[in-house]
Length: 289
Image 1 (spheres, rainbow, N blue to C red):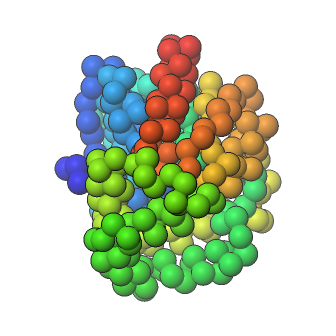
Image 2 (cartoon, rainbow, N blue to C red; image 1 turned 30 degrees about the horizontal axis):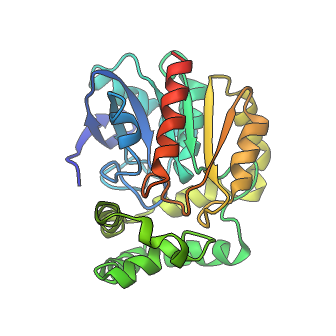
C-alpha cells in the first residue's frame, strides 16, 4: 500500500494519497471498498507523467466526515487541493462507484477540473447494483457490522492462486479459463494486494444510498449539466458493472466519448488488455489539453 496522509478540512479529516508528477495531478476517486491507498489504475496516469491525488471517500479509510454524499464532499476535495498547493489539475478520474464523486467534482469545480474520465463506472441514470440479488445482499454482507468479517474471509481466500482466480473470475462474465493464463505474475500480485487491503467501512452502504432507483432523475441532472471533455471506458465482459452504464454516460454527458474495452473483467488496469485502456487515456489527454 502507498503511504497516505490526513488533511484536516472544515468538514472533518480527509485521507489522501499524493504522488507528485511532472504534469498536473489527476483527482482520483477509487471505487467501492477502496481507500486512497488502493491502486485502481494509477499507472494509466503516472506513466504519462501525471501526478495522482487519490481520496478516501466518505466512509472509507481514515476519512471522518460522516455520511456525506458526493455533492456535499466536494468542498473537502477543494480544501485538500488548497492545502497541498494544487491549484491546477489534469482532471477528475472516477473508478466504478467512485464515478459519482468525479462527476460532482467536475460539475462544481470547472476551473479546477478541466476534464473527466469515468472507468467502468456506476451508477449512471441506471441504478446500481445491477441485479436484484446484489441489491439485497450488498448492504448486508458489506454493512459496517459485517464487512470486517467479509473482507477477512476474502483476504484468506486470495492467499492461494485458486482463491484469487475465483475472486477475479467473479468479476467477469467470460469463463476465467479463457483469460486467466494471460495475466502475468505481477498482475496477480497487484490483484491480490488490492483484495487484501479492501474494506467497506460505512462507505459502501453510503454509496448504495446514492445509487438507488429513486435518485435516477437527480443523477441524470448532474450528468446532463457536466460539460467538460469526458472519456468513458467500459467492457461488456465486466460482471462488476454493466456496460449499459457506460452507454448511459455517453448518451447523457454532453460530448462524452465512449471507448469500449476488450478487458475480461472489472479490473481494467490489469492483464494485457490494460494497453487498450492506456491508449484511450493517452489519446484523450493529448487531444484535450
